[in-house]
Image (tube, rainbow, N blue to C red; front, side):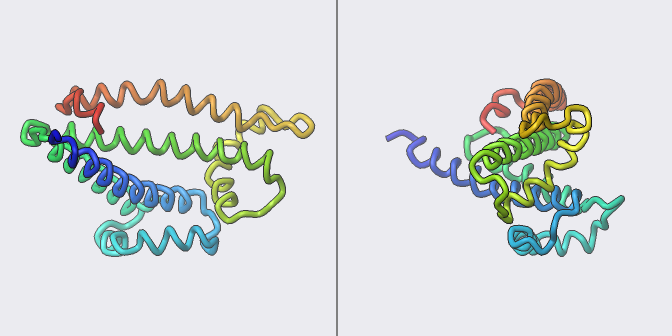
Length: 203
């Protein structure tokens, strides 16, 4: 068996474990920004699982303008650490990658995750509106809180027609187009700052 026999499962586990925790931290940050229900059971879960690294960071990094800067820093640290571990696992030369390129690649990955969170949240809302309309669910309530700032201005321009609400569809299309417009320049900036193209495709 080749070297990939054990390497591929290890890479998958590292990427999955770090990716899930980065997702949890980003969800907590988003819920803080939109001032979602703190007493929601899912909110409590996010708080408990993210408090261990955030508490010491908050002693060093205060919030600003209602934004939890410590969470942003933690996201950047976790994503950068993930990329470094992945590079080492695939045998890449970490010394040839500039710090600026590495940080920009991390920011690029985080922006991509943010867009995907909103896109999948809208898809979940659309599905639930058909199969479980009018029922309360703690996760659904938080998804509604996250997507409300995005849907609210669209609903002002395109109000519901009868029972049909096109705002979720329009917002989804906007996010897909936004991703197509935002991601390539961010990736190119990462490459310009010294992050290898071939590694971006593996991250």
